[in-house]
Length: 317
Image 1 (cartoon, rainbow, N blue to C red):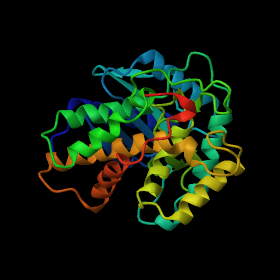
Image 2: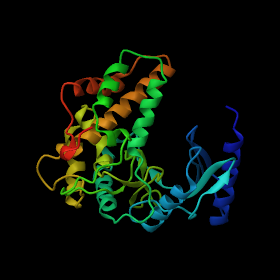
Image 3: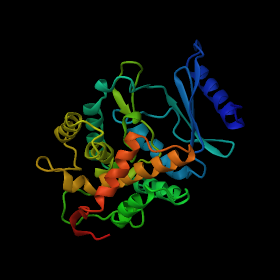
């Protein structure tokens, strides 16, 4: 693969930044991600990220400021504002050691839940944009519409159409008057790949990736593990560990005891649909059938059609 000018220059920027931080830099370099919506490179203890095209600089700066002010929850950036490189906004970060994908038993479910609870309990700073979780789900559906129809497409679209408008990014998130779950400071795209240890390799766990950070429904941050549990992809004991730790840390997205599902149902359905839509898009592009995990989320979408979602607090779709 021939490096693009963006990748080449981003790698150079990361090297310069790393050497400014550590004159005796060991000069280990790697490309961590190179996608149309994000390019991430590492040089020693410094990471540089080129954000998606058309990222709003004011919104990204607000998100960076929030991360800088919450260093016990979010990995703080090395610079308070993004730079420009080939028309893309670039940010710089300290390197953190990620979750080991080959050791699922060591997945930090309790730590992830505790960090989320702290985030959700933090007063949202003024000027922070909406959390982008619903917008990402809607973007996945747009990609599905642009993909050649497959047998799995119809149940996914039916499940999507049954969701409330706010979960489809077609209306503002309701305030749920009189209810104990107001809008909160949210991560917007929580999964285990969004946690690192800093300082590496044994520092405390922190959340990374502020691109979707903002004000929204805190249940959205619990929705992916909830969806995996509902689809049979996350063992019950791991889900229980996650939920118990979140409640123990005072997380506001679910009641302190009792059935959490009325609070989580809509967001979990939305994340299931998003995951299924992207699975179909990727399988179609690779000209291959859905694998077992991908088929499981599509099957979950089909089951959704027989059970109406919990239209939270009486808000119709």
